[in-house]
Each structure stands twice: as structure tokens, then as C-alpha cells.
Length: 254
Length: 262
Image (cartoon, rainbow over all chains, first blue to last red; front, top):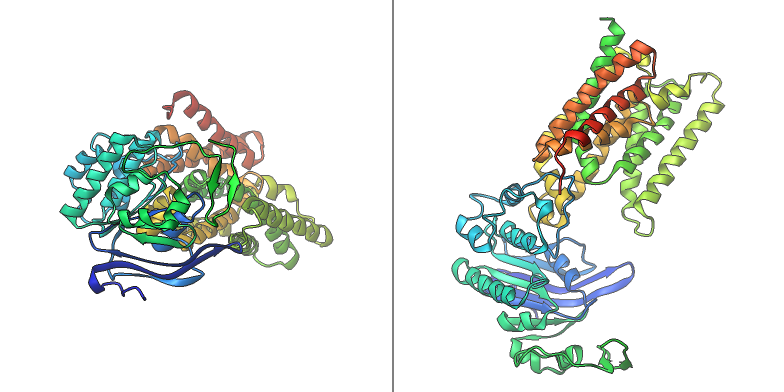
């Protein structure tokens, strides 16, 4: 089955058979992926699965060694990187940082208030906390009125209340501004709660579909074991782990 | 005012004009070592000029630009760290220059002048060269300013904003090479990095915007040049170290009176 061309059936971004090889190591193999309008797609996978690499490839930040990424013509993407480290030697206010990217009128005051960025506008960028920076990056991403918002580990460092808030914010964006969201997370709880479609990645696409469907697949069980949220996020102690190759090996940590 | 004093003054202020806005990026991007490497390799350009009799400003600029291109090209070889590549090219070029100078019979020119700067060696041709270079730098920096600032903060975000990050990085290196080449006669190969680094750092505590910091760097650089030159004429000091010490004075003042950041 070949994925649809961008533009057809409301698809914003289509990746076909994307491969990325860096330094002789194959990091991504034959990835097919489609993001439709107003869709929330989440990519999950263990550490080293190539989640951030896939985002970089889809955004055109790194060269592909195979396949192609097609974007709907005129597609505006808002990107929120995992972190941004700003040196104190660079004088830059939050307002200026957001304005650097903005086209047109920029971010509406309402959105700034919703993100809690209205109080941060005059603050120097280098003095922000991690959570504040995350919200400022979100405001910056929205300043171009994007069709697609790409979030790299947005739940990182958020408590449950913060996650809940982020979910609501993403839902609002989708409904009020027709924004599609592609996000990467290793936090199963976060992923399973709000996604239309889940893509389970381990250098290739292991499985994809609705959260419920993906949760039931053997590939998913293999990658994430019994850490399946929904009933409640719980962890137990392993004396072994399931590797992607189905090999069980001893592990020492809990 | 003596004519050579006027020339020296114009040369010093011209250098400060270009070194201010370039220097803030050198500081923000932590490229001081890049500046050092370029200026050391510039001595190969000096030797080339001496041996061949070609225009020395031209040979220095050509060598600096060549090293900058080589270093940029090295970015494609991840197994060679950027600072090591800089070391290899700059020391290699410097060694080549010293050997060429030693072998050439006519080259009884004092290399000290090129290491530490000698305003007496600055002619009208050099002044014109410096001001043309500074003009080009200022025009290009004005044009691409926001794009450069954007790319300095986060290259990925800048690329998505449509900034041609790779091309601008190369352009920045070429401009830095040009300024270093034009400043070497006045400030000297060993000291030119100081003119790129000290004024921006001294301006930082008084700036709240990127532009403010660049303007402050220009002002501090442009004030250091006449102060250093005056001391140089007054007490017969080498011009480069005198200018750099004046800039160091501004840095000390900024430590004492500037607002601490965070």
C-alpha cells in the first residue's frame, strides 16, 4: 500500500520509505508516515529508537539517505524542540525571541495568556526555567499560525496536572485553529491519553493505529512490556527485559 | 595632526566598525578560537606577499578565506573535531609562512610588525582597504542581522523559519576572515582576536538587545583605537598591544559598573 500524495484526502505531510543512515549506522529504515489535517499523531518508542531523528528528517533538518518527505504546498510548520539553551552573553527578551519567527500579526494576546507567556515577555531568555522556556517555545511555534505543530518530548518535566493542561491546550488548538499535531514522547501515559493515531517506532515502524489497537499488538507488548497505562500508570520490578529482538536478558536496574 | 596619525586613527576606527557586529557573533557562538586560528594563518599571507611581491592585503585575505573554506569543508568530516581542524590548518599555514619567510632572501622585513601591529606601516591603501571591508561587513550584517541572530539561537528553528543557515554560516566565516586580514597590519596577528572578543564582552552588561550589544561593541572598539594609538605615539609603544590594553580597560570598567546577568 503506498501512502497518499500530500494534499489528497487532507494530508499535510507524507513520508515514503524514509531511511536515515549516519556514520554507517542505519538509524531509520523505510518509514512510511502520514499526518492529516487536524490530526494528533504521536510517535513513541524506547530510547535510541530514532524518534528525534525521525522528527529532524521530517522537518528537513537532516539529509535523508533514502525515500522522500513531501509536504502539502504552503505548509507552515511550528516546531518546539526538546530544549533550547541560551547563553547569558546573548541579550534577548522573550518578546523579541517570539518576534524573530513571527510572520504577520504574530501571536494573539489570548494565546500568550493561555500559555502564561504574557508575564514573561520582558524577561531575558537565558533566565527562564525549563517549563517557562517550553511555553515560550510553544508561543514561538504558534507565531507563524502553523498548519502543523511538531513537538519533541513536550511532556518532559511536566507533572500530571501539567500534562493534563497540555492535552487540553493541544485539543483547543486542533478545534479552534485546525492545527494538526505530530509529537514524540517516551511517556506512554501522555501518548495514550490524547492521540488519534500512535506510531510505535524502533528504527522502523513496528506498528501504528489507534491507541487501543496499538496497545493490543504483540510488537507493542514486546517493546513496552506490561507498562501499559490506562488503568493507571504503574511500574513493577523486572528481573529481565524484552528486547525488540525477543531476546530476554538479565538486567540489574529496577 | 600628522598625516600618518590620521591614517592610523582612520584605520583603527574602521576596524572597530566591522569588528563590533562581527565580534558579538564570535562571542555568542564561541568562535574565539576560530578567530585566533585565522589570524595566525594570516602570516602565511604576509610571507606570500613578501616572497611574490603581490599586494599583501590581497595575499592575506586570500589565505584567510582559504583557511575559512577548508575549516567549513571539514564540517563534513565528523571524525575530525572542529577545533582540531582549526589547529591543523592554522598552525600548518603559519609554519608554511614562517618557512617561506626564512627561505626568501629579500624578506628582511620585521615579522614582529605583523605579530603585534605597526601603525607606521599603515598607508592610505590600507585605510581604503579597511574601510571598504568594513562597509561590506556592515551592509551584509545589516541585511542578514535577524537571520544570523535566529540561527545563533537554534539552527533547526531558524531553518524552519526559512533562514539559509549553512550559507549564512559560510558568509560569516568569510567576513571574519576579511576583517582579520584587513586588521592585521594595525593590531597584529597575535592580537586581532582581542578586538573581536573584548568590546562585545565589555558591552554586554549594558545591553538588553542584540543590537545594543553590537552598538556598544562598536563604540568601545572605536574608543579603544584612538586611546591606544595616542599612548602608542606618546610613549613609542607597539600599537596593537596599546589598543588591546585600552579595550581591556573598558572591560575592567564594565566588570565594576555593569549590571550582572543572572
